[in-house]
Length: 231
Image (tube, rainbow, N blue to C red; front, side, top):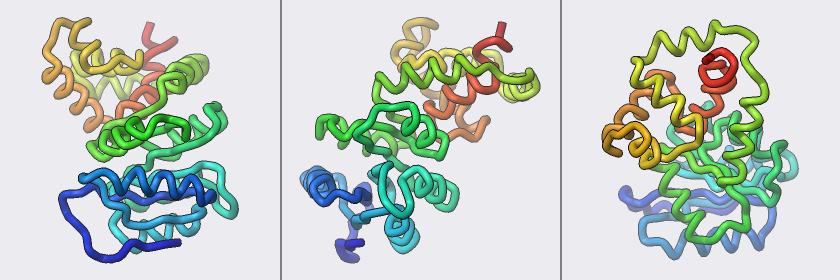
């Protein structure tokens, strides 16, 4: 595990890089260091080192490889998001496969991107997850929706509990978010301003204690709010 020192800028997003391949760590390190609003606070080669790093220093966003020796990125993500909910995890993998994407998201990752994503996409994703939103590669988002939609809820109890916590407008927002639509798309569909949609979506996430809209998609389908129980 490497540490970049103790001099920090409170206005910059503090980023940790976790990957067992030196070449990938080097590429991500340079990517972070070229951005004036980002600060690299350390690197780790596996999940154990990642845990030591985030427990020892304040980290805003972790760029997390999922396939690593000793302790993999999925388990490390689960521990980090449970112990340090303010720390966001952006999962990076070579494989756009369900067996990696879905466990990472359920473990608490706020984002999931392929390692061959453009540098600007990864940098933008860091900023987005730090702001409290979710980022998932478009192809993965589509398959995530298909995956959870194909497994309806066993009962209506959870769906009813969710409906009871939301206003009718907020419930509409949850269903719209579950389609994978952006705020702009929802605004156009419902004839609302983007700011109004953003406010309603924020209320939904807060009331349901969700980190981001990616988790909202999963919950909407797995609970049955969208799907069999919503009909």
